[in-house]
Image (cartoon, rainbow over all chains, first blue to last red; front, side, top):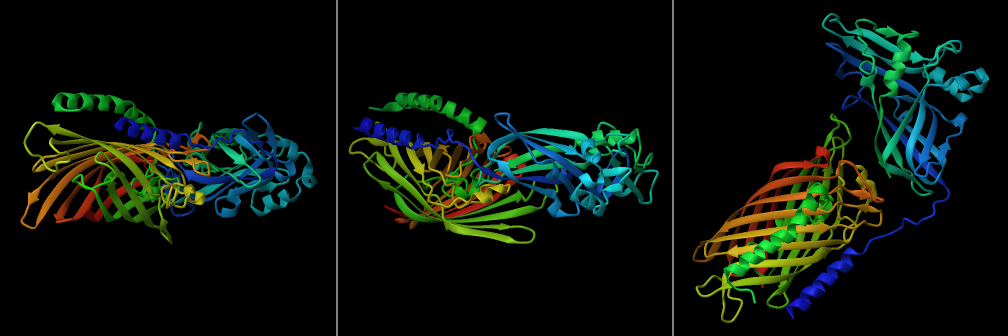
Amino acid sequence: MKIKTLACLVMLAISIISCSSDDSGETITGTGTILIEFDNAYQDSDLLLGSSSYNASGTEKIKISKVKYIISNIKLEDEDGNVYVVPKNESYFIIDESNEDSQMIELSDVPAANYTKITYGLGVDQAKYLEGANGQGDFLIKAQEAGMMWSWQAGYKFFVFEGLYTSATTTTETAFAYHMGSHGSSLDNYKEVSMSFANTARVRTNMSPIIHIVADLSNTLMGTTVFKLDDAPQIHVDAVKSPQIATNISAMFTVHHIHN
Amino acid sequence: MIRGLQSFRGICFSLVFALLPLIMEAKTCCNESHTHSLFEPTCDLCGCSTSAGSFGFGSLKNSNFVGLRYIYQNYESKDGIFENSPISKEQFNTYQIWGRVPITEEIYVSSIMPYQDLYRTFEDRVEHINGIGDMNVIGWYQFTFYKKQEAGEINFSMDKVPSGHRIQIGIGAKLPTGEFEEALTDRVNPGFQLGTGSLDGIFSLNHGYSGSKIGVNTTTTYYLKTANKNDYRFGNQFSFASNVYYSFPKTTHIIMPFLGVSGDFYNAIEQFGETLPDTSGESYSGAIGSEVVFNRFTVGANYTFPLKQSLFGDNVKAKNKVSIYLNLTL
């Protein structure tokens, strides 16, 4: 009697446990939307323009007033290795810390799939630049309005990072500005960034995942190359330092999480 | 069949061995809870949990009852992913009808039916959700141990005298009676939910001892969680709780203060079969409280405070919890 009762309870438990959904055999069709969020940080903190003071190299402390960069040529790779390339003319974006809308890139007509990897460019590639002013479409105007061009000859600024700093030797707040780009066609500072996801981003006709990317701007001054603002508070066109900045900031991105 | 200290020891050892794998698995994996979640942040946390969690499935004395219980819990979570992200405060009010009803001498059923009233306060706004939470139903089989003579307390059988030791094995389910909104899971504390939306298994093993003055209740519970319709699967959870109480009999009532410790271990949350980062964790709590028994009524109060915790990548902090209840002994 007792054993029968126990057996019944165990069977009940097993029947409960064995309920699970199995939809791995689904066929995925259609297109959907994917969102890419660029969330600017300074080390472990959310980057705040203006008031917050951040530690830079040595005794230097900075307050950041402008962070802008160009993201381009987005490619998404799914779990089977298929790569979706966003149409080139629609694949240039300016991320601006002072403009929240700019920090969320929305890509539509993306084939439904389980994406596991993203690749994008930081800056504007030479091929695009060499299409000339007419080949730039609307993006030329957008870049000019955002202050992301020196001149057509010198080309696009890929990255703008400005603010005020102090240090042990510079005790009054002093302006700094790091602008990095390709310098026309004489120096190519365009960088490609590629990152895999810990979780798949599942694009469906009715599901729009978000790829949440964190950009740690502390990499600008304290990356592979360490820059002291006391040595160089202003870097614009510089054949040596610009490529170093490009290398530093191309390593500032991480995929924090995927939200399905 | 089972009698004498020797066989009792034997059973204890076998139970411990039987439980070991469960405990180890729980350490490596679990995280959410359902039942607890309400209480345990990590888990499905909170919301769901609705049920019992560290507060247990019954009262100190091993009695059959129906009653009302109110549980207040407090959490703090980060509203964002950064060190300087603002903190939000969550307050969970849970109102439960709970009870334990005998079926035979050895078999009884316990159930908890919660109503949730949850608040999340941000720097600039307050979110409020309320409604029915996830109820649970557990069937229990009780082994009562007897000694040769001398009175313990309640005599369940005709001739034999209970030794005061009891072991109960419970198997049950947590039902998805509470609503689960996937949109809410984007926040750091995915437990801010009325329910988990999933049907979960509950496996519990209790030991109780009641002497003439002192009693000890120890509960270990494993929650096996399944994916809900959003393919969101809270992590499995292992919980233990142990309370020691002392009886002060008065002329009209009995006062039973108690002290307790509890722990909860959560596996990571999975979605679409993939593990989500920073969703596992563990917490240990202390508890102090008292029950007062007047005739057939029992009034109880329990204050639970965190001892040590690491939940959701430390993005969620459990604060204090209070429960009060009024039971009518059947």
